[in-house]
Length: 462
Image (cartoon, rainbow, N blue to C red; front, side, top):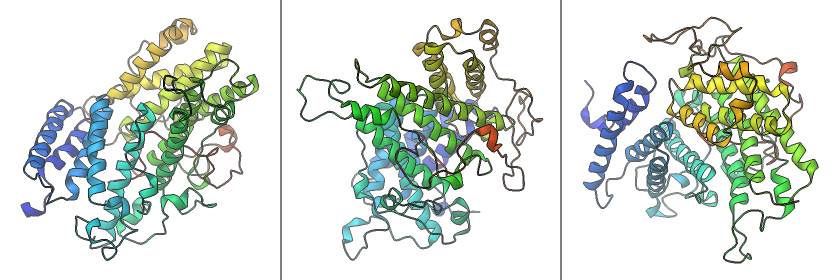
């Protein structure tokens, strides 16, 4: 029997159980109780340690897991408060300077013992970087100022999952170096997600920032934004590095989400910029190009979803719903402006896909509600047959391979997504290069106009 002193504290275990319970019919009715119990035990433990003398990794891990649970269940403001707690804890432990400052230089910079091995050091890096991604997510979705200043970070980006699990060395970079490097082949999928978050977060923050020379009563937006700044946002296109991009890499859940979220971020930035357009702010040529880029990004999300439609729905990243929502926005805006019949089928496919995710994600339900609020007449104006198809609760994909379920779920049906649990033994999916219609020679640099972000994590494990 394991020594109770070496087991994770009860609040960390319950937070993990709460997240796991949301993915299965058998325990889904217990997830909320586990979540509330985890929060209660964590807050009680905090009250027992008012001076924070016995600080360790577990509270920071727990708060970020709690934030993920809250985000996936639509408790958005709670999620950002929980994220803020984790941010301050990792900063108190100086995890943002894990590889840049030694104890000799400043003995006050560490509250925890030095990591004994590679695995422990990498665990600390991952705790910090997941917290960083969640902090940037609050900035992107809510417009909050970031709590983590990138200029203070001297922690290496995470290595690949294989290197982490096997405790082997692997070349990695600091974020500041990754943002300027001309080659990104050394970056893991998790590290690429971090760089993408940084780039897109900066782009959106620029659109939200006030002009210090503006009058006090003027609002941010088209009143003070220069046309060239809006024009820059409206010509932005985000992609991941070539070695992680489809169709050049086999699709697994991590690479699929990484690519879908990058395309979704193109739409997110364009949407934010278009919301701030004033009269004659930019030329019609730029607006036409912006609309084209959004439709292309949404089309690539649809293509990835079609290729992976035989996967078990539980294998998808929990926040795939958000990328599907952004793709819907891209198509809906273009369709309402152009009424191009060619946009109706992919738009219907995306809406049906969101309905499929309602079975395992409250976020999908919220995204569907947001679409209905943002485009109240959309369904009524779609082709009648397509609109009627959206009345079904879940999506039944046609023309896909037979489902192969992970584990056993009592209420699983052929309408569920499915995927083989082994993603490395020839069971990954490849996109046809011609069908995907991507340039075969993509620049391999972290150019702001080429790469993007997902507002949600992540390509790695805590």
